[in-house]
Image (cartoon, rainbow, N blue to C red; front, side, top):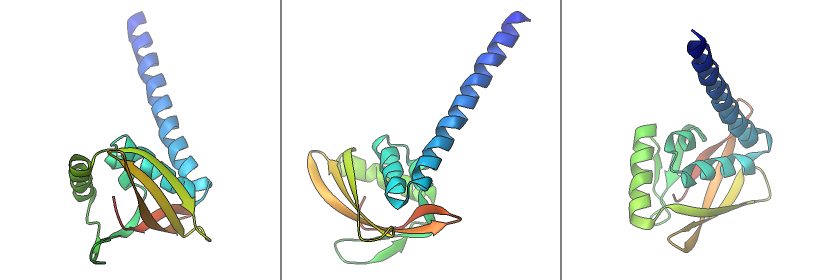
Length: 140
C-alpha cells in the first residue's frame, strides 16, 4: 500500500509540473505580445513539436508562397505537421531564430537558420480571445 501512494504521488507531481510547463509556455507567448507568440511558435518548431506549434495559428490561418504569391489556408494540424516534416527533410531542421517586431504588433519578421542558411519569414499576427496568433506567414 505504501508503494501505491508513493507511485501516485510521483505521477501526480509529474502531471502538475507538465500542466504548469504548458500553461507557462502559453502564458509567455500571449502576455508578452505578438513577438513572444512568434518566439513560442518557433521554439516549438525548433523542437519539432508541431502539435504545439500549430496551436499558435489563428483559425483560418494562411500560408502565402514567396515564389508565386499564392495563398492557401492551413487545413489541419495533420497537414501542417506533414509539410513541416517535409521542409525539415529538404531544407534542414530549424537551428536558430530571431524575431523583429515591425512598427506594430501585427507584423513580425523572423530570421530563421536551417542547415547554416538564414532567411526571413514575414508573419501577420491577430488577436483571438485576447491571445496573439499567427494569421499568415510566407515561409516555413
